[in-house]
Image (cartoon, rainbow, N blue to C red; front, side, top):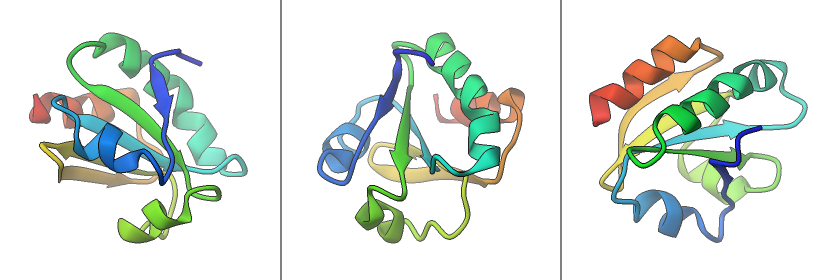
Length: 108
């Protein structure tokens, strides 16, 4: 796992994600979710690729229900890309690194 992927909870979500000057790709996930585990290596690589330009953040929905409810997370993995504190784009389900990279590129 990349040390550039940040794990965020309900308590620090607003400060880390909404207050970021860089675009933030948030992965709503859970430990029991197979597709979440499938995309984890791609997220690690993207965190390294976009270091200094965009952030990759993971929110465990089992431990951070308030954030999951606020953003209407009903299916995981759910990826939301935030820019300037607003949702810029979203992706539900496991997708490849190229598609996630496109999401980030559009926000930069």
